[in-house]
Image 1: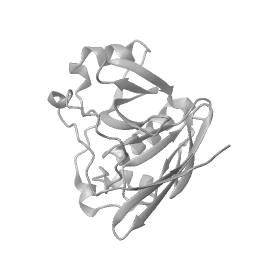
Image 2: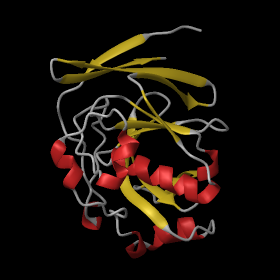
Image 3: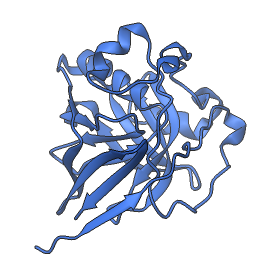
Length: 220
């Protein structure tokens, strides 16, 4: 199988934040390349063990954690999506950037409930994917202070995305998985890891930090 290297220099730019429901329609498609940046991770003292060797900004430890950043109860289409599956509680809701198999990034809504993860297209309000918590094996993160995480699902294909609230997502997944199945979700920290971009395509991501500027290399 042929392989290729793509090295992309990433400027120190913040990913878009969507703290208010009023910002829901604010999208653009000008993310031709992923932007890896120092993250304002939301981490409390009780979530600190999840971070392992992550490089954290000191100020990030004191940010408020809301869980539901979209006010899900005020959006009937979101309520219908997860209630139809029998889920009872929304543990996390926010807008993220998700990698496609081809390496492009798309705006998506991420919902984490007491039983599953939901990926929703905010433009069409359509459910794109539901992943049972029981199907999640581990999460992979770099050892740098970036916004990227991969959620590994061995029975399907993996999920690679970027969020300024990555720390909170990981913490919620760990706790939700333990509550739902009494399974301890593995959190792997490495500057090089593989993920299944689709059922038949494995990609490797390598992270580097050069003179304060972050880089990533995708090898397909």
